[in-house]
Length: 348
Length: 217
Image 1 (cartoon, rainbow over the protein chains, first blue to last red):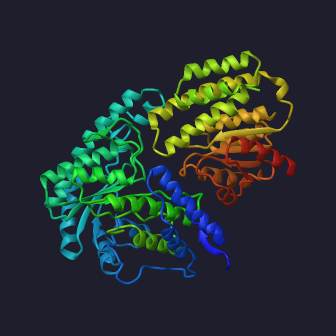
Image 2: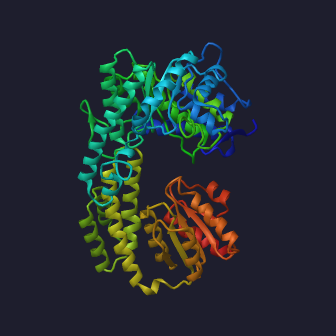
Image 3: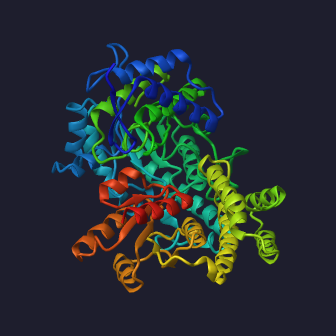
């Protein structure tokens, strides 16, 4: 057989022999199994991945009947980033009516809960108008973004300055203060948007600022679900494991630092979360087959323990999608097909 | 040749983030006339690499990483000072200028590179971290460097390495210096893409790449 075309995790094209492809698939699943302490993919699953990657077609997909829910976060922001000069509601309509989005998300370009707080009354009428002109379930989304709560962007001392100076306890105290403020902001903004009709709240890129960030999302979810038991709260992640920036924070007796997706989902369930969006990072120095085998291994483990729907993130730099401005369709379609056919997903 | 027990102790002291004991061990090795670089290469560097691996796996967290890094910085500074005193080792006239690029404050890896390069007889000018592109080029001319080595530990600061290549070309200085790039997110493909002369995977590879570039020139 001729060499098989694929790419590195940064999008650079490369070619592999059959034995190199198989070796990378095996190494990718072993890496995930080793890190997550989860089972590697079976021989049959690796063979299936091999078939996906050795397909000569540029674009591949799932068989009819295996389609799953397709969701987008920050959709209308992305469409403007690509140079289409449309307003937010028009952007949502394009995603729903042209691109086949099954759920939609309205958001502000400054995608964090804290800066939405003072302008939430300007966001509410946009949500009402968006709901009147679209049909798909509509989320309001933003990030906890705990970085905004420390100096110079917020009131508390900056842990990133305190830690290197050896002031570890002070840095941890600052993280804890930020959690309280962030929870208040998420619950306030979330409540305002739910009360003007949003079908759900997407707490996105959770954990980007570490374990405190994840804790804020869990606590806010708990409070939102207590206030609005029938609303949908999705927790989407920022990375594959929770960075221990504080290292000592717990939720319901479980230490957050170092948790991988199959453990994260259990806490999202405990907090009352409706949908969980796992993330597995793309390694730019490894091949796409290596990355796909790895992400499928992690995500399969989530599907096996999850009691709530899971919508894994498949975008630039995550879900084995290459880290480059315009992820190539050959790799995106292969990664998506592999995820849908091997993992127990509810959506992407 | 260092005792295996001492090497293992050095690894463990980094893992335990024990700055005081690590410094004492380094001073002891130097005072006994044993090569401190062997202690660094065989003990402390594998120790900090293991810490980095554990951090990358979510099995060790930022407070521990910070303490381990501070321990590593302490022992590297002691070793660098000892090497600087050993003038016999600086026989080569090959001059390497090293810096962490603007916007990037990471310099533990760079400090190790400096140690190994000095140990291999190169004259090393370390500009530190968060260094402007213009300053790197200006200093490279001032010290008549043969090699410019830059480190970038963030995807957001990697473009500074490209900026250096472009600034050298604009100033008509590109052929005067060889360039080596390194840092966690940096790859051989990135080096090729921006036009750097070499990519260094780690400190030891950096030394090899300097030797290869010198052999080519």
